[in-house]
Image (cartoon, rainbow, N blue to C red; front, side, top):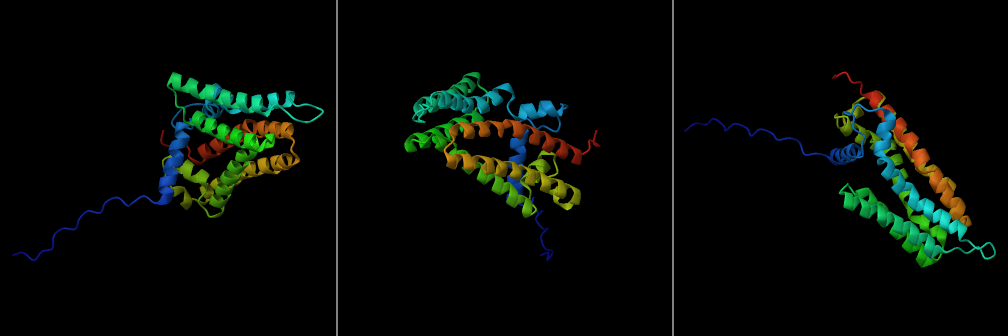
Length: 247
């Protein structure tokens, strides 16, 4: 009988960590949104695609714009009351039309569904309280959540922008060993956190003042007009970290 021990079992791949899973999810989401590093397209085209193109821009802007216009033009100057039901109904109805249009066209409707659910929840809250400004309250919660997550991730050295960029560019979390990349990803996360904080600093006082028209205007101005340039800067910064030496 041989006393030679059996050969050791080959070690399998290490189990993915929580940061790996999160980074993979963020990277995949960025690629699905149109941020494809393999595509030979200009920054403007990439950013426009990431916003969903013309349809995505309309889905993002029109429901809020319709609410703002209807609420403003139906406000009685004497009493200060507006037709809240009409403003919210048209806004949510428009979001529903966009969702149905995507389903009919068999295009990805995840974002449209998310927008419809958010619009419906916000409208339900505003109708329940009878205050038009409460239509913006869920947006504040979203800004707090996103801004806090980005800020904390930067401070602990695991920038969410870095996790998304690392997996999008094919290096996973290896960027954390590069001081330059860590510094860039840190400041990108801080910049995005500052955007969400700025929205809150401007809009929350308007909410407590009950100025729905000013609040709706501020939301539109601080939406895509600020989101798009910061997305472009982020895309350019990430691309600069990974020269196309492989070509």
